[in-house]
Image (cartoon, rainbow, N blue to C red; front, side, top):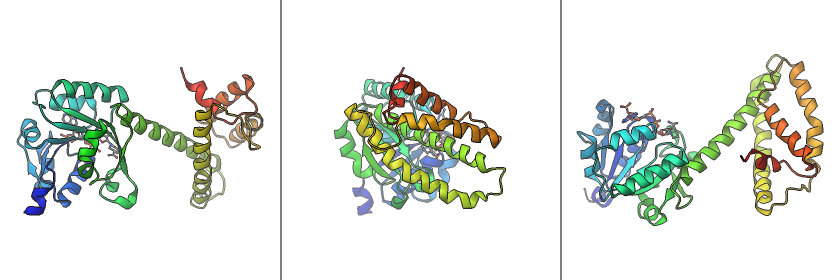
Length: 293
Ligand code: FVH
């Protein structure tokens, strides 16, 4: 039909949980969609919904200029595309990789005559195609190429271009997920502290999540401002000296509750090191610099 033919054709390689979710949004939006998956059976449901299943990866790549890849890891991308002609293709790689792998993959694509964008998906499959869920994808590489395909790329989730360096999408992705795991570590420690007491974890949960929400935003903004200015001194009462003085309370409480301090103590050690360098009047921002090797 006319509406469908006006939409950019998309080839999608990889029909795992994420690839399948992406595919459904392009089909629903009327994009002609060619799919390929190593295990062909995973394409069957999408074919019923209007996708065309290519017989092999070369046929899939040949079908569209815009080729989106969402495979398990960088090795699977190299393996799947090893013998495929990429001349004239716009390759958008949404596979999670390291920044170095993304840069190498960009050079690899360029050598094969393709233009390349890297992507880092900040969403889980149920958030794809659900704008109100807040998922989005970091993109890096040529801004011009990104803008050329932005409308199509915005169908499954929001788009944020973070730089011409192909490694930046992966770097942003890993940085945000690393912060998430640090937060999960704090949450695990907090629940462990109350675990053996007569405290309902479900009643405790809103207190914990509310506290994290209240602290996280201002702390992130303050750290960013201080890193940019180079002035880490704090204008609030909770300076590093005061916070280090409080750490025995946390460690003693953990011991008394029978909880290992292994998740929070490494952070306290860095705070103590920074204090020992004479930074008692600072915020916690100096810990960032201590991590740099
Ligand atoms: N699912 C999630 O929550 C996360 C959210 C954030 C982004 N990630 C990344 O997205 C990539 C794909 O993830 P996925 O959820 O689709 O992963 P799986 O369901 O495990 O599907 C993996 C697909 O990769 C194919 N595959 C694996 N190895 C090879 C290979 N050597 N050659 C060709 N294809 C390969 C696999 O094919 P098959 O097993 O069905 O034959 C699936 O299509 C990933 O980077 C996440 O980190 C998802």
